[in-house]
Length: 116
Length: 115
Image (tube, rainbow over all chains, first blue to last red; front, side, top):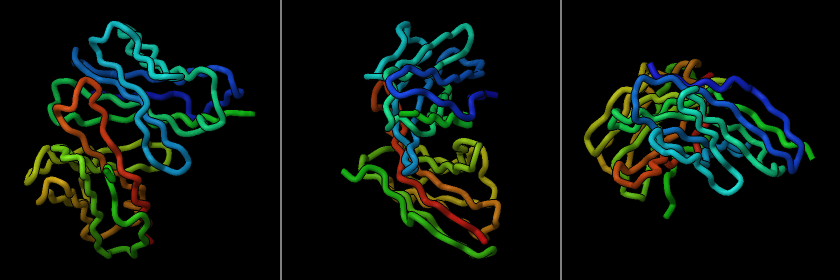
């Protein structure tokens, strides 16, 4: 069964520094997608970045990049130059390619706190 | 575009009461989903729909029913609420042909407390 593991319940980072949030996944499918969502204290779910299993390049989106290591089944989120507004919960999620319903499996999340 | 909206935003129920959560999307998306979020557990899929008139069970469907009579609406029903259903409920939608980055679009959530 597919599974997403986020082993860091909470993280601290100093403002302007970079931080890496860990995500490992388990799937037997060759085609899948990996997502990161941000959930600020207001509660909404904000899509950040996507990595397809066949993408050769690591995904980047502004200050967000995804460190995709397929052999290790990891998809870590890197946030560069942290800002106070980055303080939030971060969820890693996966979609299996053969599932035409595009269901997502979420990890338990990492709470990031950016210190001034 | 309003995107994905959820009604109500907050609700308090007594054990045994029933209620319906409404999700509406104006993006003409084919697929819709209901998740629940409990502390420390991330989001778990309750039910989903891949088109008008269709529904299917997700990971945690017990105690819930859903209906998708119109493409833009997806209703989540609790027939007899239990304290274990205290949670934040999120609705999401997506279009299967929206492109390479096929993220789901989420509503703002409904915070439900069952006493």
